Structure formats: structure tokens, C-alpha cells
Amino acid sequence: MADGGRVNLAYIEEVTWGTTPASALTKVAFATSENFGMDTATTLSNAIRGDYIKPQVVRTSVSGTGGFPFEVAYADGPLNDFIEGVFRSDWTAAKTTGAFTPTADNAANKYTRGAGSFVTDGFVVGQSVKVSGFANAVNNGYAVITALDATNMTVAGLDLADEVGSGDEIIKHSGSLYQGTTLKSYSIERQFADLTNTYIVQKGQRPSSMSLSAQTGQILTGQLAFTGKAPLAVATATAGSGAYSASAGASNEVMNGIDHVTGIYVGGDNAPGTTAVTYCVSQIDLNFGSPVRPIECLGTLGPAAIGGNSFEFTGSMRVYTDDASKALWDDYVNYTDKALWFRFVDTAGNAVLWYLPQVQFTASDGPNSGGPDSDVMQSINFTCEYNAAVGALAVVTRIAA
Image (cartoon, rainbow, N blue to C red):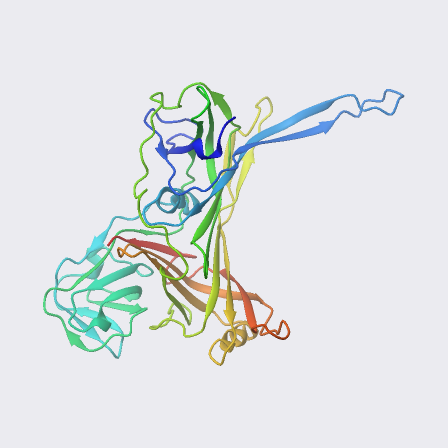
């Protein structure tokens, strides 16, 4: 009998849709299960026989579908590679000022430099950054860029104090990701290691959605879904070697909702505030939809290609009601644009930061009582809108320790 704990899940990004490159596949780190398989569409023959029997079941289409849930950790396959497919884009290169001498400005909540250029350094509005080197600790930490020119970087997420730098200050990130138009695909293979020469490969898999969930008392988790070609059973690994490369960061710390959600910021349009929200959030869910559609041709079994549909980015929060958080109900009633910023940081200091520059609260049950011996909660759904200043629905930035 095959054992679920002996399944290896591996992948490689394709250059040509449906064609596996001739190099080793990489193991998927932190997947907790998988449900890849084949969807078959059938119909019954309507031939008249005179005995109330429809004689044949006719196959009309097949496709490969499925995905896997995963635990969130920095630099693993789901968060670094597959999210490129979900966002249909590539991570930017890491950016840094190097050591320089900026001034922190409290009134404008910005960093100013007298030499060099933030623009030339490659920073862009919407990216998150890590600032270090200031003597005053409030000027160091994680922030999101809300306005930028060559000598000024306005930020949210930090409440700056006036200070002239000493020359040891650095502003950096390890790469950002915006929505793009490049449809990516992957060959995804399962090896049943306790069976003899048993592999199942699914080629041409385009990501159709990714979800993330942060809850109190739980590990941070996610789910990825794909659509592509039908699965194919093979006797050897697709790359031919039978060996899979280890995923980068496979030994990194798995994050949880208590130790590693280090900030939740809600503010006005394109400005998520300078301090973390004071109300108590018990759950955040993010859903990044990049729907795809199979393209089918006469004479071809299964999709001949996979096209892309429009992005659909949504989410929700579950919040305890108090004098501060009741303002969220007012925002929902008044249909007020908001900006949201979440950061997940592991103990080593590796960070993944999610910036939603413009959202609308689209549904809320309001502050409702569940009866005696219960808390008054608000469940708030939101949908991301395109923000022209940022040029995106959402921006994710990673920052290595």
C-alpha cells in the first residue's frame, strides 16, 4: 500500500506551455497534502433503442486540475515561485541604498537624502522596505513607500521622529511583485516513493488562485489551485534523473498567527497609517484569484492551451468590536476606500509584506451579538481596486533577514 507520507511533490517552471524543461525538478516545500488529478466531462448517448436505455457514455473532454495546501514560511516554493504564476509577473531584483546619510522627517513622515537618488536605486511606490541604522529606534523597521522622488521617500507603517542620520543607515528590500500579463505554467510531478517506478506528471499547469489565512492559535496556511493538461503516468522522473532538488528555504521556520503577524495597518486610500491597528483581529484571509480557461480544439483531447481571465483579489477580516474597531462598520456603511498592509516576519527577521493600496469593504454583518457568553464580532469582506498611484491591485515584497 502506498503511504501518503512517502509522496514527493516536485515542480519546474516551463518555458513553452506544456513542455517540461530537461533539468531537475524541485521539491515543493511545506505542502501538507495534494489533490492533483483529472477532470473528465462525459455525456450519455441519446440514441433511441425502444427500451428506455441510453447505451453509451461518451467522453467529451479532459483536463488536469488540482493543487495543494501549504504552511507559510519564507523563501519556499509556494510563496516565491508559484506566486509569480498567480501574479503573472516576476519578482523584481533586490534594491538597496547601501549605507548613506538620510534625514528622518516627522512632519511629512519621510526620509530625505542630500546625495544620490531613491529612483536610481530602483525603489518604487507600493514596495515595502526595511530601514536600519538610525539611532532612534522609531525610525527603523518595516514601512511601505507611499510617495517617492529622487530625494524623498514618504512611508507608512512607521511613525518617524526628526533625526539626522550618521551614515550607517540602509533602506532595502529583497524583491517585489506586482500584477503582470505573463501567463506562467509549470510541470508538476508526484513520485510515490514506496512504489516501484511510479510517477504522475501534469504539464501545462497554470495557477488559477492562491489563498492565505492567518488565525489566532494556528499556523499560517495557504492553498494553491491549478488547471492544465491531463495527468500522465510515467515510469521514470520527468527530468530523467529520478532525483529532485531541494526547495530553497525548506528548513525555514513555519510561521504562526501569534508570533509572526507583526503588524496590521488600516488607513486611508494609498496610506495605510503609521501605526498598527489597535483593535483585536482574530483572522485575516487573502484570496488572490487569477482565473484561467481551457482552450479546446476539435481533434485534440484535453486543452490545446490555457488562457487567462481577469484578476480577482479579495479578502476578509474577523474583528472583535470595541470603541476603536467600530469605525470599520462606519467605513463599510460610508463605502470608504481603505488601504491595508500586513506583514509576516519570522524569528530570524525574514519578512513577507502584503500591501493592498485601495480596497472597498463589500460586506459586513456589523457588530452583532451571538447571545450571552459570547463576544460581539464583525466579519468584514473586502475587494481590491486598482490604485493608479501604485499601478496595482496588490504588491507583495519579501525582505531577507
